[in-house]
Image (cartoon, rainbow, N blue to C red; front, side, top):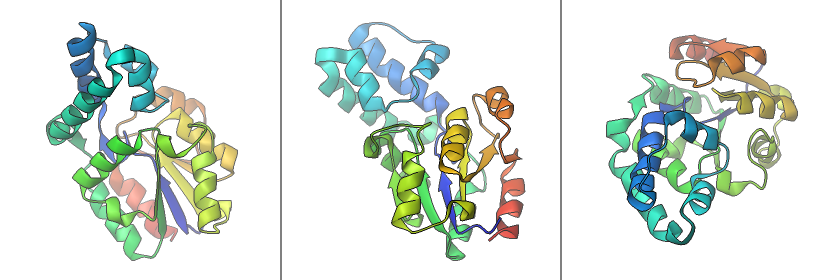
Length: 214
């Protein structure tokens, strides 16, 4: 394929954030609900944004719990995340080749911007679509369609990059190719069952593919 635009997921794709997300939810759950959730219970909540989950979870304590959640998320970001070595440099190199770049994530706008700023890559993206910016979350293709329309790109020239089943389904529904990156996927078996167009286990494999197709 001739790549002219690439859409990236964040969690598990650009950075490993599961430990941070688990700790952030349990920080406020313990403080306001006097309980702790297992990792599996928190993963079951994935889909809507943190704000939606916190509203449902915290009820009348939502506003103060939200503030505590994001303060904890930001303060512990570098300590509780695992860098995907080489991915930030790859983003920079892709952008130098005049490729249009977008984010399409289920994360809310606040955590999305915190993470991209901590990685120092926010300014490389021409469009950032968080869970707060769409009516329908992944696996809806809405965030992909918005990118295609804004930059007048043909689906055949656009690649979606993500680690989850929702990324595969969203890409298929938008008629763009999907590259499933499995260096930090929490759902590798489920992703493989969906038969993505491409699979990558290392940043180098992915980088070699990109530069053969831009």
